[in-house]
Length: 167
Image 1 (cartoon, rainbow, N blue to C red):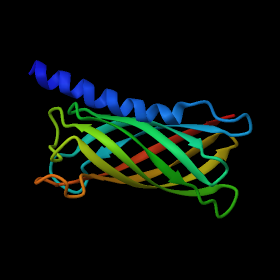
Image 2 (cartoon, helix red, strand yellow):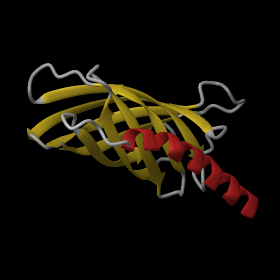
Image 3 (cartoon, rainbow, N blue to C red):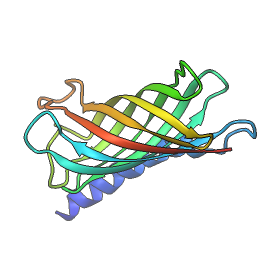
Image 4 (tube, one colour):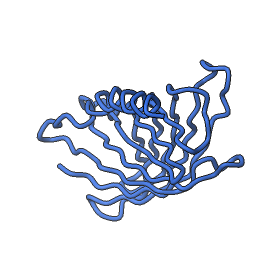
């Protein structure tokens, strides 16, 4: 069990280094967005669990893309850290759609086994801006290993999102 714990810490530590890319201070004119989310993990199959996560979005050179880093945990002690990118589309000043993709390091804990430590997270968020610095929305995402391991059950999540932009 201690070997598993050491291995878990190394995996999460390795991805935490990737996640830190999103935490690098942005240029003065760019806003960093901090997001907290909670909801259900594994909504499509048996083994659903509650989850809590946070992520950081940092604009990437005025391209419309954001660097994203985050960490999620379930009540079943599954945990994953991820780093990737998202793109924002705002058809008007209030609503926003944000698709994203990230690479994750995953530990199942007492939860669902997804086949291995490397997982890929594809997501779509729809949110509404209440004030300049506050957004509320829903995020759906899929976490799976894309068949790189023999076992690839995947998992879908539906979560409620609260985001706050910090200049």
